[in-house]
Image: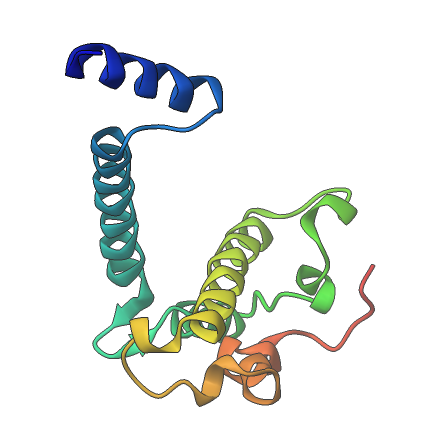
Length: 142
């Protein structure tokens, strides 16, 4: 048998069994690595809010700013947004900032070496304070 026929049969068997050849695999792997690097750059650019302060600082300062202006949010923003019947503009912004903090909390805990700085505020005992939960009114969740 000639080499071309053997190569053709090998390729067809690999395809029929749901696999891909090494060259195609390397192409897919390179593409995935490139996409992963783009996400790492994106995450790193969002992680630092101001100077070396991480994303939770934005939510803390937003809550502090509203509190200083007499527009303190209630603790209902701690609920899942789909459980709230209606929200004010300020609450929507806070909930959005909260989703960003939640996502980074998960990422920092899973991949701590990817993010610079002190990570102790990313853990439960310190995170609520770092987010500025102290600026929320102590009213009911409804």
